[in-house]
Amino acid sequence: MATITTYPTLTIAQTTEAIAAIGQTNTVLVLSEPGCGKTSILRGLAEMFGDQWRKVGDFFADDKYDYIYIDGPNKEMMDLAAAIPNHSTQSMEYYVSSLFNLNNPRPKVILVDEALKVPKLLQPIYTRMYLEKTVGDKPVTKGSYIFATSNNSSDGVGDVLPAHTANRLTIVKMQKPTMQEWLIWAQDKDIHPVVKATVAVYPRMLKSYLDPDQQDNPYIFQPSKPQLSFVSPRSLEKCDAIIKAKLPESVTLSLLCGTIGERGGRDMAAFVQMESKVEKFDNIIKDPMGVKMPDENDTAPLLLMIFQALDHIDSQDKLNKFQMFVNRIKQVEIQTLWFVILLRSKLARLARYNETVTKWSIANHHLLG
Image 1 (cartoon, rainbow, N blue to C red):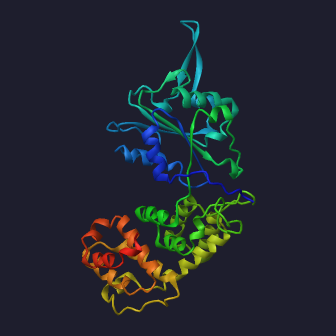
Image 2 (cartoon, rainbow, N blue to C red; image 1 turned 90 degrees about the vertical axis):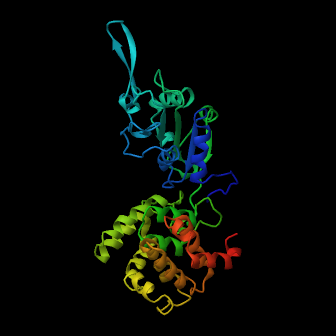
């Protein structure tokens, strides 16, 4: 059974801000469960610093930093740096991989992923990188950031850190996103409404095995159980492509189960079947006060309709009419979720100047505290 601790944890946004604040002096090691978005911190830092995100290995002339991703366990010595004989001086000279782009004087933002799984032979190179901001014997540009990510040791996936190394790092434990945090992110990334509605109905999908009373949670990663597929923020994102492919029902079910586990896959497949039966967005806009409302005890179709609407609203008129429909929903939890995601989505500017939305927020401000 997992041990429940009170060790303080940070959200992914807080973790990114912390690295931006202290990362030039301290090497931060970020630990979390599998699939929680640790590697996306590199992208988050690029956005925070105002740089253009690109494929790993591409460098843009207008960027303030070079962004470098290192897959720790899958790199060999020659992938990083090596001492090569210099025959003219009869000495060994360090050559550093072009991966680090050291010929460019710009500072670097370097992520060492799965840092606690690197081969023992390479640990001294990474340790010097963390502590001395060097690659081999070559210093990286002043003002560079180097940080690392890996899994919790309690995850049981081979992550071990010697105490003398740990004491030289700033270790941050990053929490899984909450249901609401993940839905806001998913809305920004245009994740399919079926995926978002499934998570909204089954918030246990984003619980952690470290949370109390989750030993029987059928969706999530459990270190004590043999699992190949389970629900995580990462695997939920992969469901987006499966659903958008519009494959036969049996194929979709098989792919979903192979991505987020059987229980999660079957629950999401039920939403795929439901999608064709809920009231279409255009019909709601045509008659927001008269269109048939689903049974008030059945939250699933309402949530699906809300997430479909968030993907289709593109004018004040449509937002105004759909808000009229939302006002008819009796479950205040659904209305509140709609409002929160609306105000944190790409539609936020539209919503702030919408009279019907404003009236709802004033009347229900006590729900938003």
